[in-house]
Amino acid sequence: MVNLVNELVATPKSIKKIILRGIRTTLLELGSATKVELSHTLGISFPTISKFLAQMEKDGEIILVGLDGSSGGRRAKRYRYNPEHMLGLAIFLEKTETNYTTFNCVGEVKEQGKAPSVLMDDGLNLLTTCIENIMTKYSKISSMAIGVPGSVDSGRIFYIPGYEQFQNFDLKGYYEEQFSIPVVVENDMNAAVLGYHNNRGIKDKQSLIYLYSGQNGPGAGIMINGDVVRGSTFFSGEVSFVPQYNDRNFRQALENGNGPKKVTICEDYEIDAISRLVASFVAIINPHTIIFSNDEVEKVILDKIAVGSSKYIPSEHLPSLTMSDWKQDYLYGLQSLGRDLMMNGTNSKSVST
Image (cartoon, rainbow, N blue to C red):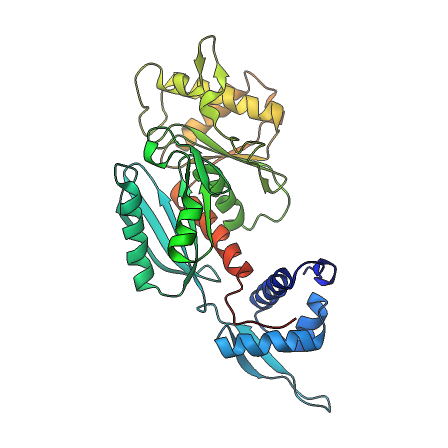
């Protein structure tokens, strides 16, 4: 647990946000706690904790679950967090469809579904209608995480080839104003590598690469020592541009003059291009694991990539090559981002600090 005492050096609003996040996170991690336990864990005074808990209980955000045994004095009240108090929406945009999931504060999925693609003319209106329909059904949605096949800087999409209607568009600002809830917009591969890491409960600070071609050309999610790398201009992971051979970049090498590649990777030229990219990642980052989508590769192809990579880099330095469900990892990553927004929210009534 993080002691919050040293963080309380800002404005009353930010102090309130820090305290609320601490209480929410602690209750969810511990399952339940008393005021004294929260006070000791978070390093916040008992009276302050009491004021916050009183308002949170009134709002239905926490639930009294009983009284602890007495050691001679008044029996302490024990509280747990109500995971249904706030819900989140994770939604990602693909060429052929829009995928979404609604979930509560502990990550339990309420609904998972698909809608027609919005990456087309009039796409913004279609996306807005889709979100409105979901939020009408789930009125407690308190945060939204949107995944896009492009590069994003603080919620503004600045590189999304083929979908000009979303180019240089502040999707975060637009929907925060539209729905009055916090919104995060993230690149698809950054979300996928985050989801893979979090869903597997990887505790140590590993370095991971998630490589996927999908419907919009190749991209990579990069995590170094447990942190997603977005880069100085948020362009990290755009591996299409990595130079390969004399006159072709990685995307051109994958397509080999045949236009968009097939779903599965099987051709020798594809395996060699990927092997060269793997060798480049090893030489620059030396990751623990490189993840591929299980709808693009099979185990026999991973073995061929490992053999091909060892032509360019000593085999003892090669990472583990593995497969995973890209779509599910993507949604898990967006859920993680949406849950963080919920934990940081200050939607409880005003509490004086």
